[in-house]
Image (tube, rainbow, N blue to C red; front, side, top):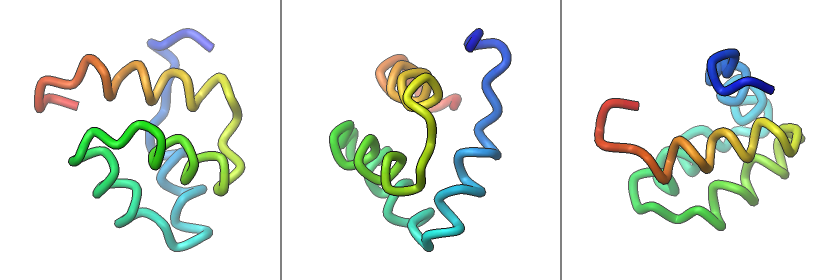
Length: 64
């Protein structure tokens, strides 16, 4: 997956299916990469997308 093709909405939709959107945002806000990854895995987000999300978390400067 090209990072430019990343669609965050799809990740959020999958997290919503398991009622974990709030927990995911809490993980992002606290820079808890392990928790964010675990939540995405639980939501059955593919590994390639998880890698992009974690990369974006690492680069985050408040604009993502």
